[in-house]
Length: 132
Image (tube, rainbow, N blue to C red):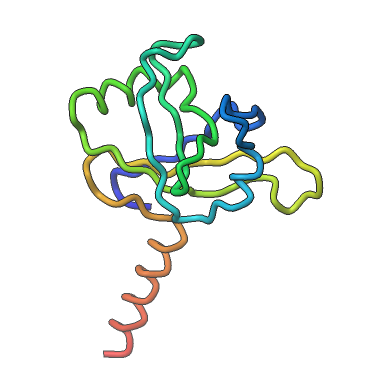
């Protein structure tokens, strides 16, 4: 992960979307590193600070939790370049399990990075320096 990246689980992944699309089906299509869009939903009837989590295919897979949606939503409202990727889809290895997703988020305009990618890059740099 990058210096300013952080991980955050998504809530509400088990529910169907109002348009009939399945969040669970969409999570099965998501891959680590895939870009995610975060959209404010000020007219959401459950929470006026709601931040929707939308896949690269335009399907809502859940929401940022109430613990963080005010903070992240205010950054979006103020024009911060908030970026997110799929960090991990949890539950894929268990038949019939309810899936959820953990995001990697960066609010400084940098591309978020998967933790493994950062470690591989560091290891490759060490190997190159030792070979020199």
